[in-house]
Amino acid sequence: MSLPRIAIDAMGGDEGVRTMISGAALARRDHDRFHFLLVGDRARIERALEAHPNMREASEILHCEDVVGGDEKPTQALRRAKTTSMGLAIQAVKDGRAGAAVSSGNTGALMAMSKLALRTMPGIDRPALAALLPTLGEDDVVMLDLGANTDCDARNLVQFAIMGAAYSRIVTGRQAPRVRLLNIGTEETKGTDQLQVAAAQLRAATGLDMSFEGYVEADKINRGDCDVVVSDGFSGNIALKAIEGSARFVTDLLKTAFRSSLRSKIGFLISRPATELLRHHLDPNNHNGAVFLGLNGVVVKSHGSANAAGVANAVAVTARLLEESLTERILADLAELGEARLRETRGGVPAK
Image (cartoon, rainbow, N blue to C red; front, side, top):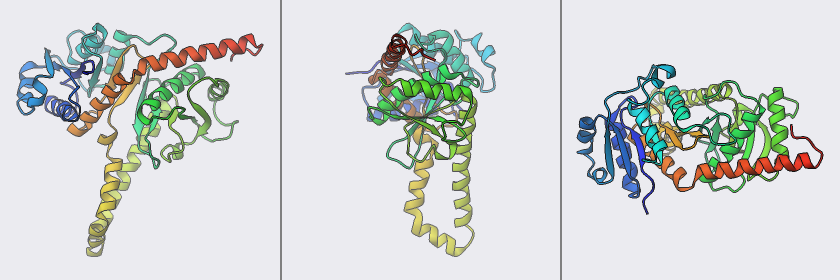
């Protein structure tokens, strides 16, 4: 059975059409149920398709020459939502021509256009940007928000936890993902008032399919001890950039060390299987595909510098979210949270 079509913003990203089409073709090579709406310049898309015959019968082209610039302000991009490849890909989701959209373009513009066109689902105040990060455990960790909302209150953090847990259940298969709030310490007295209120609400919401386990510090995000890390977008983005920078620092340091002497070069040859495993584990292309959670539709952000394998991973993530009905799962959990708060009120304990 075919999945709903995935709209691809073929013009976004550093490499543009060639990489986006190659990535989609690579994804379809493993999953022939994928079908696409390719949005962008028809001539350039058709040239790129010449190298990927498996894509032709599975794709429709929506011609568009206008592109959102990488440094364009979201307010400027919004004015051209009806003429740009990014805006038309999102509009296809709203109109039902596609089940989801994938873009490697400007993150701020993608969020602004997605929120305006699709709106947030009932019970969600703000959408959040979520991504998978590698860990020492068997599964990746879901982290959100990663920059969509710099200021968040307790209500936002609780909603992020619900959305992140629903996403984690899909990608990890855990029935009750372990959820923690990012904080400056693990003690209950640490953190802002908003963090403490959010923690109290999550502890009280016993009917949700998650296991709230308190706080986590930034240096423990990748240990594999939790499945979902929740934060405001300001702190989350800083933590993400620090993790990415540390990964690059380690790999660059190893390269320098292995090149420092003949003995080191011999040591590199001996340890090459281990270093290749490390490189694969830290390669951002293997974890590509950040999701805007909380919208009435699925929108996935591929990294602008992603290669074809990275784009393929983002497409595969998108298809899995469609297949596993992410939006419906979030709505069900929000309904359960509302029922839990109603039970608290009827029991004489006012919900905070």
